[in-house]
Image 1 (tube, helix red, strand yellow):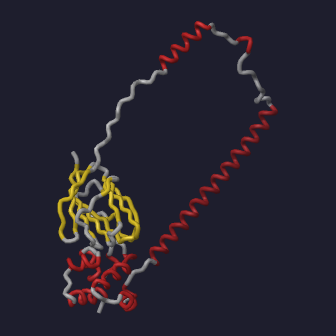
Image 2 (cartoon, rainbow, N blue to C red; image 1 turned 90 degrees about the vertical axis):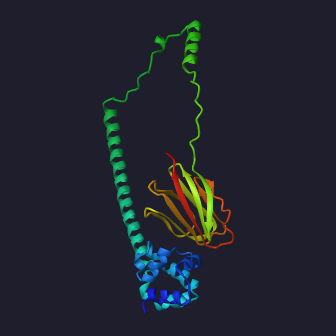
Length: 274
C-alpha cells in the first residue's frame, strides 16, 4: 500500500475528519489532501514533506520514525534543494571573482596612465604652479559695503516657514469573531499591507491569500511580508502560537480569544481604502 493511501486509511479508521485533522496536526485541509493523494512533490515546498509527515503521523497515533523508514523511497528530501543552492552559490562566486579581477585590471590601467601623464607633464612643464590671484589686485571693501552685503546675505538666507506634515493613515483592524481555533478579523487596509511575525520559539507558519500567493511555508521565529494588492483574504496558521506575536503595519494584533490552543488559524478580510 502506498504512503498516501496508508495514511488516509489510518485516519479514517481512527474516525478523524479532515477538519479535526487540521486542528490536531496544524496542517491545512488542502495540504492534508495532497499528502493523502500520495504525490508529495505537489506540495508548495516538497523539502518540508518530512516535517509534515511527522505532524500527520503523530495526530493519528502512529510512530513517525517507523513510517518514515518504511516509506523512505516516497519522501522527497532536501538534497536536491541543497545541491541547487550550492550550485547557485558557486555561480555567484565565479561571477564575483570575474568582476573583482576586472576591477583590479582597470585600476592598474588607470594607475599606469596616471604615471605616464605625470612624466609627460613634468617634461612639458604642464604642472607649473601659478598664483591664484595677485595680492596687489585684491580689492578691500569699505565697512559700509560690508554691512550692506551682510544684510543682503541674511535676507537671502532666511528660510521659508516649514509646512506641518500630516501623518499618512495606517491600516486598522477589528476582531469579528471566532470558530473553534480560527479567529476572524476585518482589516481597513492602506496599502502596502505589511504582516510581521516574531516569537521566542520556532513555529511552523503558513501565510497565503485567496489569489494563490504563498508568502511563508516554513518553520521560523520571525518574518515580515508585504501582501499583494490583489488579495482580498489572507490566511495565517501558527503551529506553535504560544509566545508568538503578530503585527499589522507595526501595530500589535490582539488575540482576545486565542486561549491556550497550540495551533491557531487567522483569517483576515481585507477592506481596501479608496
